[in-house]
Image (spheres, rainbow, N blue to C red):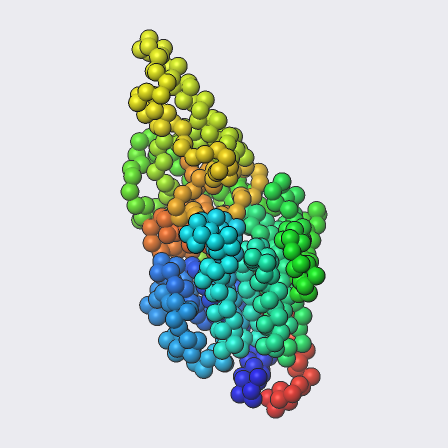
Length: 500
């Protein structure tokens, strides 16, 4: 690091010593899950960079009052850090922010979609060549330019073994060469008050000048993760042990353990209970078409408690009477099937229920007309397709799932933007998939948080986001680390710091 950059780092330390709030730059920001958590923990959101137009507008609406300057979509590959800092009027690139956070797009790291990449590229390891997998290098380019005192990188657990690469470990090695102390772990959002079992890789780093070490937040809630969701440490070791990566995971840190004495994890029912029921689709009042957020839905009567109260009273995002984005998909074929399914049922069970419903419909038709419908006839096929979903049971076992009311929801995906079958409401009387606002609740977005666009873009933004409550927990740990570090340096000059 040259003298100018070193002085820039020291000036940031001096600013925090004087009581300034740490300034955050959010890269690959989406609608702002990380930004919201960091803001709640006392950080100042200086700016964000996001390529998706709807998500960029959402971020601008919620953190900069819709300022067009902060609502413009930008491509990190096409935008040099210096030009970005100038565009937002942040000031000199190496002094204008204290913390960088962000999650380079995870599609290239996730197991979902690799088979399709193979088909496209006709190569058994085509996912290695997905250009999205290189976006984490752009993140590091911005770190090099902005010289933050601290940073956070978030991604899917598969980042620990991406085609034989441990992206998290390699990133830590690069950061050490740039003058940072770095470490990573896997955290499950359900242990931090989020009503969702979402596993994420979290990487933290601090400038060596701070003399800080990497710590992750202690859990606030406990649950026994069900089959299919192993603990964070077991997930990490499973990924690492698939290759020789285990011996090289020097920067991996075991996550803090959740104690059974902690409050139970927030369940789906606790998260959604105060939101109004939706039954208009069962009454013939829901039509096909785009869902806009111009219809008001009042909360259920009674004072909110627990999680519902938190979502309605989040400072800066309060909502007193109700919400405007409690809208659902038009799925007339499947409403009766949703009602028939049991909590926890996935696609094989749903398909079996549908086949039984089809047999019942055949019997009812035979009883009404006195004649059977010939198997395989056009009439038979038409009736069957009106009841039974067409997907192969063997190929799509996890495509559908009816939520369990007494457990946190399973992981919300960006695929919510295309369909919501992965999160069918647990209430059979409502017989539907979750609404936009319910998805936001399950991600821990407060009710006053606004999503730009219509239903599909909003679902996609929510599914792509980092749960704000998980982000807040990590941000609080980072804030404490920074405060302790700069306080310890008050009477401990180091290098050029003596001149400050």
